[in-house]
Image (cartoon, rainbow, N blue to C red; front, side, top):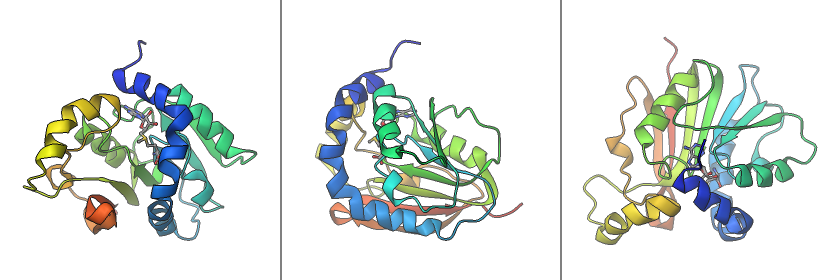
Length: 203
Ligand SMILES: C[S@@+](CC[C@H](N)C(=O)[O-])C[C@H]1O[C@@H](n2cnc3c(N)ncnc32)[C@H](O)[C@@H]1O
């Protein structure tokens, strides 16, 4: 398969990604991942767009994890971050078409991926599909508020979206039928980045 534009960009970003992103996002990551709580034997946890593995140091022990990303260069960084841990496996693949059966994961972590992909609704739909009833989706990303003016971010988004991330995604415009929004609170940059928690009630 030929590389997508984003794959090419993240292949170039990979050697610098941790230096640019680790420090400013550390606290927000820790807060988001603290929501995983004590391990429960209810299936593995999926990290969508695991990237270079900046979440790995903050993942609670006792769970099993699967990390998926489309960019080999980012996955190689993640592999280094794993060291000798045997509770996390990595897959190369597309989060808009997850290669997993329905209802397999008790949590899906989506840190800085929903606003990155060209079709966030497809990624959210896929996350909902693979989530078990009773499971939760943890989102950390940049979103505009509904009807927010933000002309620069809207104007730049078509360009930035091709090389790194979109800047015009409005979370409230994404649909998540039958999921309950448990949290939607500011995480970074005066609320541009938000921490969101969705719950899929048992059927
Ligand atoms: C901004 S980085 C976020 C990485 C990581 N989640 C973090 O918190 O640092 C976005 C990641 O999404 C990956 N990505 C972009 N499009 C993707 C797709 N369609 N499927 C899987 N991964 C994708 C990129 O390769 C990159 O590693």
